Length: 590
Image (cartoon, rainbow, N blue to C red; front, side, top):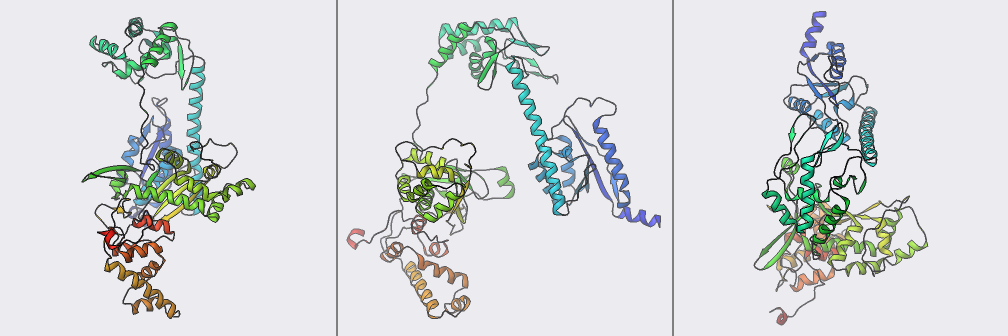
């Protein structure tokens, strides 16, 4: 019987890998350190499950001196590589925080384990991830592990700030002119003389370029120092940026800089305060003033993302003397790895669609009320502002490029464009401010109001679907300056007539099913449904099609397969009608 059990255990053998980690190097030199303690406890746990076929692998996955806030650890990367090769069935750890202290990294590791059917066990924390309660406990444990790491970082930052307020050196590369002795800055006589001569020469010349040329010609080298690991750093030729930073360094006047403040230090000054002040006055006087940039026409740049979360950048091109602007998905390694196509959309129509969507929201009393209600506060003033929504919509449409850019940055937290729709994430607190804005000044994002829900987001979805498959994926929003056709297109006219006949057939036989009606028209049910939607085209668009003054890009396929929005203004933008089309006589056309 015992032999049968052993044979069964061997048949279902499960290779177990033990992973251990310690955040700092201190204590690793001991004969029995914490890594060995973790490994011993995990090994005992594996031996207690040998009847289930658990077998400890001899490979050691030990990360000594590596933080749990990152996955860039040598032993962890070797563990992941062996998992991908199918060499590991179970990962055994002492505690969850030994594996990672980042909730986001833990999710990635869990996905990896699930993909290769690898289970992991924490020796000191009993939970079962097979049910929802076990997964909840696991997430709680990881949340507290990440919280502990962040609290430790906060304590370190507070300690550094306290030391700098007292004027102490807190580590890092020492400034040129000083050496670090017993954790304190001590003047290096040779380097300090060079620093003093550099400040005196800069005040004498009054020209930064000449000073840099003289120092580089003299062969000045940067500060050479030795790290705690014994690595020699620095010692290369000085650069323009290094000299510019040295001229602004407050270390040389005996101060300790911290963020935007500085505190009196306990180290000795190298440069007299009067000389340093004169050098700063020359720097400010010689500072290059950048010209004020012209307003950018790319008002959605920085706000726009595609449906896969990639930010969209601007792509400009010119053809036959005409400039074209497109928003294109930025390249990313994740997209290349998963084979995601880049999204490409014409910039002008998309920007007009976003502004139109905001104007529609401002003009729609019920939608605007629902958005403002998410803030959780209501009074007579807000109700009066909502009634003035159409006025605010017209005010938004009259903004120039610069004021529109600032307004969109305030109103929109994010804009996402995909094959199916365009989503605008509107800040409702800024929306309320915009309703009360008089238009006399520039509308910018307001400061955060303590105690109020200022980060509420209202999502506005606008249908704007891709109607054709191309090698370079693009949304078929026509360019704003698209030319109009000069003759009616029989295909488009027949399509609208078929749509009208389909609607008449529905009204004539209301008891028939959609499939039956589609069969009478010799069409599929989905195509028949698309025909019916064409009856809700804006009247001026239908008139333009019958008169032959529709945009050149409006084809039969594009019209029938477009996800038609109910808003007439958005329909005009989708199909290239940026102005209400009117009929033209033959003399005007030719």
